[in-house]
Length: 139
Image 1 (spheres, rainbow, N blue to C red):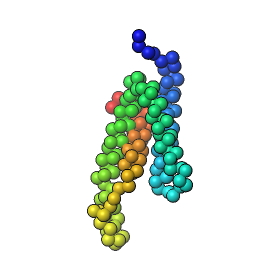
Image 2 (image 1 turned 180 degrees about the vertical axis):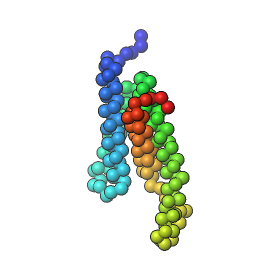
Image 3 (image 1 turned 90 degrees about the vertical axis):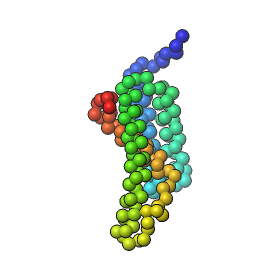
Image 4 (image 1 turned 45 degrees about the vertical axis):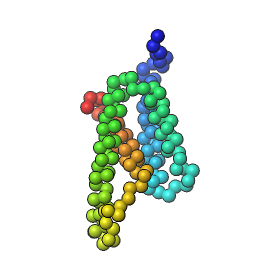
């Protein structure tokens, strides 16, 4: 016998959207911790919020085609964001270094380990919300 959920579909959808909103808020907090010198107790807060949000989303599963379409659009945007980040950030750093005369070469640029994940999450949620606000789950 297959296990079925006792939560109605509209409540499951509301739970998924609530967790997506929590994940987006956690991503913005993560970027804030990377950009600004926030207290150390704030550093772990976005990771915990993301673990809770993604854990509940995956626990409920992507049973709905609409939510799965939103998720797929977000993953495409996230992957694209990371690729663009790694292609263009060293170029921009080199151009700014040349323009300011600092002598900082693009070869000297090092990516902090937190930035690719933060960029992927930012682009994921941007893609998710773009598809959500457009109202279509078709790619």
